[in-house]
Image (tube, helix red, strand yellow):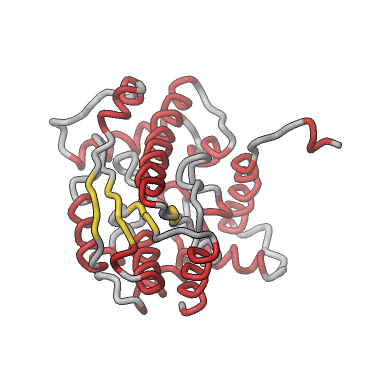
Length: 279
């Protein structure tokens, strides 16, 4: 923990930033990064941006405000629905304002299964039918608008943008290219998700935040474990074995699932390709 705090403070100082902006989502990762940033830079030098939109869970904003109160930082609520609407994002998926949340979540889960036999792998590989690809464009636009909003707030202040991607997400491709992978400093990218959860307890993050199912809060009914097809502790256990150089059991269904994810996640790394790289 001390090492991460020192990393944040020394990097901000070395790069000439005056502080840091972080997107507060109401989830455990942004809460942990926020607390580490406060410990490193002080409350007055950390600014939180809360970015709900049309499809956000009703609890998202309240959980995000709970985190900002815990951190004691200044913040702004910026609803990004109008921006998403203006760029045509919401035209890809109809509104469901009057439908109960539980019904929306079941509909989305059922639709996911109808459109693809393995939605997460198809997402990673950018494949699928026309309707599935519209869904990819729909949810990815949200992350990219949030990234633009974060940099707008950061650059006005001369602040760094702090990312909240953890090692599990990074290895498995659970991020949006040019979205939540875009930041100046990534304080927890070396920590598996289960390690972030342990750190959250050490940092006394509110229990409500620790106990809620991890979710990108972009599509109703889809959380991290739904996407992975594995419980997070199971996923991290296999990832640790692979990282340690142990030969995973190829006949274990969990191991096979992780290997499929890692292989498909390679597509996420494609960016800025040029003929120069071939020489």
